[in-house]
Length: 246
Image (cartoon, rainbow, N blue to C red):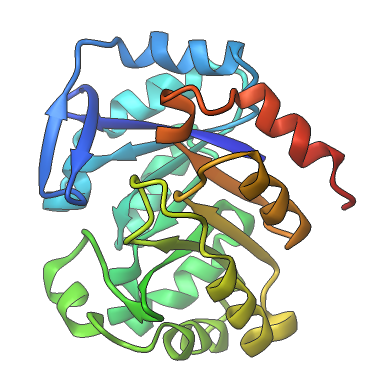
């Protein structure tokens, strides 16, 4: 599934520069933008609370829930969520799935709660050269796993029941640097059947990347800049994905 991203900050559409440290807010209406993306062929949306990623206070959650009510496709919430209570609140509001941030790996006791949400939760592995590089979430947790071996930490999560992962190459995301296919292959090799689903965020440059992800068995990919720059349309990308054998 091709998931276009809708980034939120201060109740508005936003763009992130240098991860979540610097933001530019835009004049676009978030709900109108979401409806437009669905009209363009999106079968789901990836809505990110950038303020939550920076501060841990998910003040854009009501807006994300309003987007979920306004469209007839599932809405996935990102924003480096680390607290299972925040995820539960989001799901109660109508969000279909929550992406927990890599910083969550710093609190292994929370991982069973992530696993208990089943298909309604993904655990992000934000990687750079096979090392975890959290870009948001609980600061102390993020610091505790910064630079840790990504595959090793994923194995710890799998041992606690987590089986659905969301892989991001932090150097490629937002820079058209290519999807993390090589890391995804290493992760599958290491964890094997412990992985129920693998999802990817960012880096997609063209339709060849979409095809390669589909062939690799990736369940969904978040796209942003490539669509915004007109390199391909959402409908074109979804068509390529649909043509690949399941």
